[in-house]
Amino acid sequence: MAVTAALVKQLRDKTGAGMLDCKKALVETNGDIDKAIDYLREKGIAKAAKKADRIAAEGLCNVLVKDNKAVLYELNSETDFVAKNQEFLSLLDNIGNAILESDAKSLEEALNVEVNGKPIADTVVEATAKIGEKLTLRRLEVIEKNDDMVFGAYSHMGGRIVSLAVLNGGNDVVAKDVAMHVAAINPRYLDQTQISEDVIEHERQVLRNEALNEGKPEQIVDKMVQGRLNKFLKEICLVNQPFVKNPDLTVSQYVKEADASIVSFVRLEVGEGIEKRQEDFASEVKSQMNK
Image (cartoon, rainbow, N blue to C red; front, side):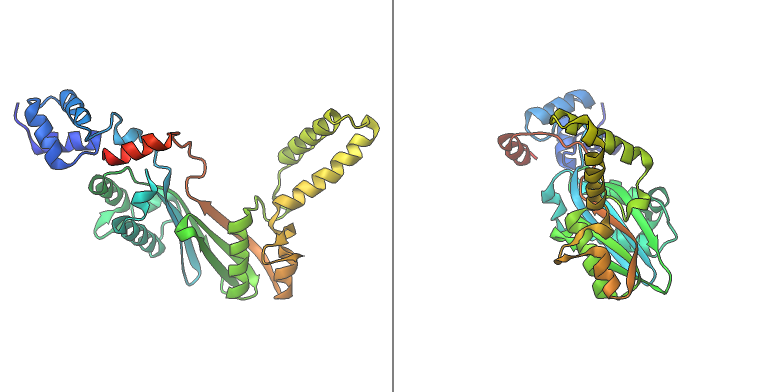
């Protein structure tokens, strides 16, 4: 069977091996894809799993701001080694700048935005083949403000965590301080008005059962639970949290001193919500050596 370029590409997509290795494997196996995969595995060149089945839980997030628009997004890779690669970093910047200059409001729309004449979706696929790891543009947030508002952007650990705060009034320094607090403390809500009754009722029931299991008298449990619930609600709301740079003030008090108020915030952290593959250290090192 003739070994065509299309067949080589098919094997490369399945294994992540280099073009020359794929061609050699196909020649050795007379064009049989399944046997070629086994050949590459036996030579330690390819893994058993297809790229599509790999878990891209590493990578970087980024936040970019221009005038009254900001974008926050996450580009995933399989390993943190690749996330330090210059090609990956260039791809991260190119994607973000293209989205920032576009009218895209969602991830689906962003994947059709062009980078150097090609849709971002195709650009990521090509980078996957070139770099040799599955890459995924997984999340995107597009935030717009008016002229009276202020953006504060913050990036932590080179992009492992990024955050954005939007303030009414104030200045860039105060807004960035709030974004830094958001990155560090990870509040769930802006204030208690954003918390649904379902969340409150669930927490109330958990706290009640906890108090009863502690052996507290039932007649005082409800009062105790309300106190604990109020404390919990304050802890998860940004405006009520002790400000990370001055715990004597709440975040709300800090921004109020600058004649400002918080409109909204966004926080992205690499790999949130992805179930990562569990491997021991020896297996991880071995897998890297076999790439």
